[in-house]
Image (tube, rainbow, N blue to C red):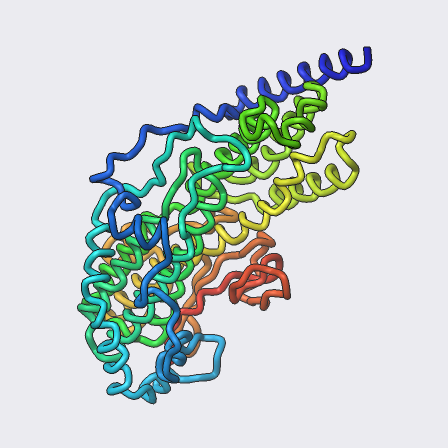
Length: 449
């Protein structure tokens, strides 16, 4: 009788939660996220070079982090606004040594050519019949670390070429870096793992712009294209779709165990077979419902984040799982680490938005001899539009400073304008120059003069 009552209760609760989500336009159906496979000739991940070194194996020499001479070590971080160093220090880097690094990379021309050929393909997908999905063989694997290693290589090449005065070649490096960001492999359904790799590549791209703009390495004629390359990266849409896909993947994974698809003769299936269906339905209901708390704070259409709502959802999830959710919170517990990824996504989207405006500001200064009084005057000649702050929908905060420079910032995760005051991150927070929860997110790519 107890088992029958539990099954009835679980079935009713899971149906109620699915109906609530459907009324909001949400789906937890795994099949609803599936897209047709990408034809190999259009798929970056199906290129023979990518399959060999970025999916099935390890990257070859030019995309491994090398043991570098001191000159290349110094390149890792060009001077930033917060550091008391002049961009003149970059001149201490020995040009002959930098050229020597380029000569070393030249041994791998064919490898670079193969990667660049692959990145010309319009889509990037890890094709596999997703209907074969069973736990624990969740989704096809890729050597995801190959992508940031390749991005770091193009980041170094871009800096070296700029320091040597080869802006045309540096622009090619920057285009490749942007293409790598777009080519990060996606799974169907999308998952948070693949989304965060894309966010990580966007960070490498944005930081490259921030550092090279601060060091005044881009000649003015190149700034319009640099600015254009900043635009069109929508990390919020990519992230929220991956969150919804992750929810569907989690549900499908447990269903595959429950149906004996994973290991019909093993211990996992035997355990699942002993658990009443009602118990599993209650797990599903709590998992799907709590996931929704983390989605409610993101408005993709308006490009807005409600940090307070996301934090409240995170606290509710922690409290609920700590209290056991009536003993039906084991599956929901996997949602816990995802809230921090909202912040990482927001940080890097903000960096890209700020980089776009910084290029417009530099172009304006080159044409008029000084930075503008307001951002509005940049449109339309020096910016097609100016992106708003993710946290309140207002334009990014900006003011020209008394020393002839400028201050550009977002109000950040605390959603409060602190007047451009920036707090350093605490241990355990996002790996960035900004604090996750205090102070403003201030652009660090302002030239030092």
